[in-house]
Image (cartoon, rainbow, N blue to C red):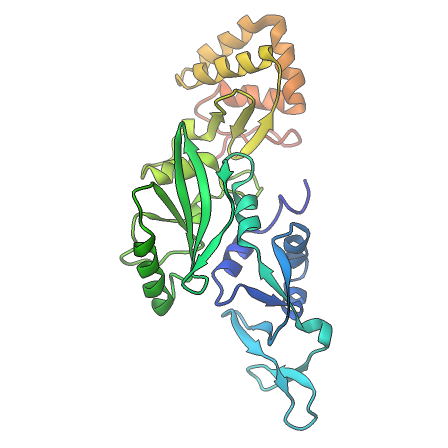
Length: 311
């Protein structure tokens, strides 16, 4: 698994909720390997300008400003303890969070997104991201809103959201929400991140939250309409061939009945054709078979891990 799939979702969401979507090279050094993952994934890109913001000050995500030293004239900044930190020209390189690339990463292959051309509103507090496919023939506009925990930013953002309301269905996501008077239409992205360790939004969780209901076991497994993609807890497996596609669709429909014995019997009846499934899924097939024939437990699709129910 590469670093793109292993990005720290909490860090990414914290950065999205910070006062500014611009980070300096000095800040990236402070973030260490996590920042390297963001750069490698293309989620942070140079914006072509020098930065006056060099580092996050402490744990409150407040930014320190570059200024000339009052005595030497060299560039740097004073921290809370009045300690001087000099900076070089390379440390002033600015990077910006690429909203389009970030949502392509968060959504992954399990959710289709059309026209991913994000448009900012209200000084970057609200973004129109594109059109996303929820389920069946249901598409909706994806909006992203940030800084909801800051009262001044929240008021401006909510006013902008109200102006962007349309007759089309809308999905509004935020990196964090506030406790009181939270509109039900705004979904905290933390609630959508799957359990597979990828740091991506899980399709089943997205559908359940969009429909305003609790997550059910059938939300954890989904077969695409063309039968070529099987999604289990946010992990997508692609395959081809009429026999395999037909078997997987039958398996999925049988599994949805909630009777493990029926799914097991269907697999037994598949006979030699089951070898096609074994070939299609490789090392994950035994684990997937146990998953689909057991509705009480919940197993991650990790061929190197021992099968165990999720609490």
